[in-house]
Image (cartoon, rainbow, N blue to C red; front, side, top):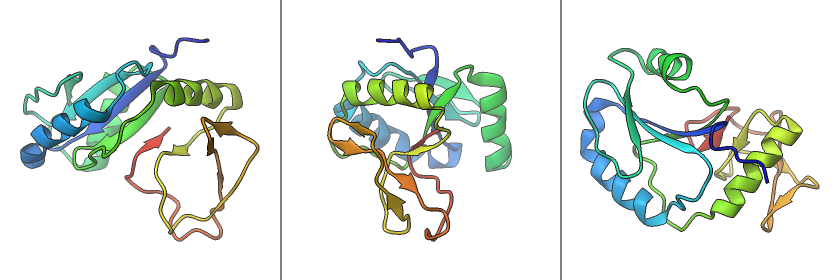
Length: 156
């Protein structure tokens, strides 16, 4: 198995104004995340220091949301792939490192550019021949979906 620790980052993109959510995020992430998953974990704030279990705190500085994200991706995060979270997205069930590590391998092998790690009725999908631990990796039908993008958890 290929080790993707240096290829994949999990980024929590937070803003200082939502500092009240950091503790809750930390609690639920620590409770449910399988830290055997081969990725580096970053908790990005603007200027504040955040002590979030299992995360390296990086800072973007003040600015617009997109400008701060771009700075983080260009200047702070060196990994090729990024799982994107925000501080108000809290896990509610256990994750499985085996699933994620296999997903990372499949992304690299097939050159997938976006894998949504959530579901919503606004997205219309078609099943594929790719399955990971009983989950089908479906193809997004952009024409039939209500939205192309979201801020929900996605691997880029």
